[in-house]
Length: 338
View (spheres, helix red, strand yellow):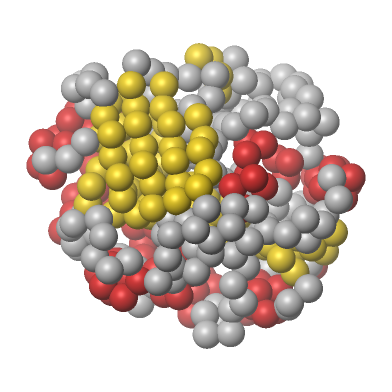
């Protein structure tokens, strides 16, 4: 059975950095995000790792793991949200205390998806792939990102519906950010292999393929055990997003996942937009998606609102989802069923 946390009104948010923290020169961003969430009625408690960054990580692995474990065990904290992603979260996995975790939400993406996926696979506790803490610092929040707390407030057994965005951000660092942080300038178009209307149902799992692929073959990436013990062998609906992989490396990673059995008893795949999907010798990401669809005999949707070209829908690892993609638009209905 999947266990769903519930975000209560006025909950305390714990901000810890199991991957990268915020360097001194960017502390104002973190302070602003804290103020915004406090004005919305949340309590915010920042751990020491949120404020430090050196040698591609917020702190040594033991320090990061201890702070994360403490927040997960602390009954006062209702939601754990890292400031953002990073590079080396996988270093803490051996020291994460899965046995003592309280049933509470963890929200994030990028490198954080290593932790999200591992927690759901090992414990059956649902986790939330969506916005990070720093990106909640805006005067306003775009409608897609703004769904995060509605999704996390959905009770067990409840249903929540999200729509594809109207526009997305093409790249980072292009001038001043907007009142809602992101520069949403490009028209969003959800696509499918074959350009056909696609409907998919299954239990959601996924994250940033750059990093979750490294869980394959470890005690933290046992998808088959998860299917058998937590979701009664229901099909999995994968969502994946590429941060930095070349098209060839993306293809290698997907073949690796297939060979490891991650796509067995799968109902479909969804891929987020990515600026990394540049052609290589005429080999395009659309070729990759077509090959995957042909090999698996499954529907494939792509350029969905997920990943490093925001905004993104909030996707719940472990939740049952019904996804429809048609004429460039998409809907994601998630049902929080055990």
